[in-house]
Length: 136
Image 1: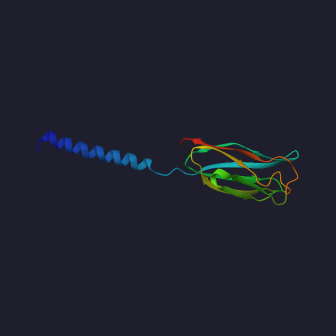
Image 2: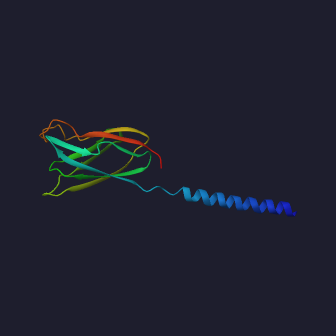
């Protein structure tokens, strides 16, 4: 092999090795996105802060609810087949409940299936939206 061909072969091998190393680092899975939602008593009912959340589309999301009320609630997204029971606070404290899910790109409505029923004394429903739109 002539000297220019040897150099070309060597450069090709080094280039392929560098390209493989660069793409190997980018295939690492992203860590779950973590969001905290607080549930508070508000007037004649409860409210969530925040009610609407933006998440990474297609990525794992972990939502932790901190319930400051003495009522059971749910976080229900019918379109994703998701419903988690949020237990009431104990004593004068707070109770946490976490749920993980993956939402494809889109906008999803969530609500509490227990609010505005006979089990709750108020007339409105806790609700909000999940915007699965963020890029990494």
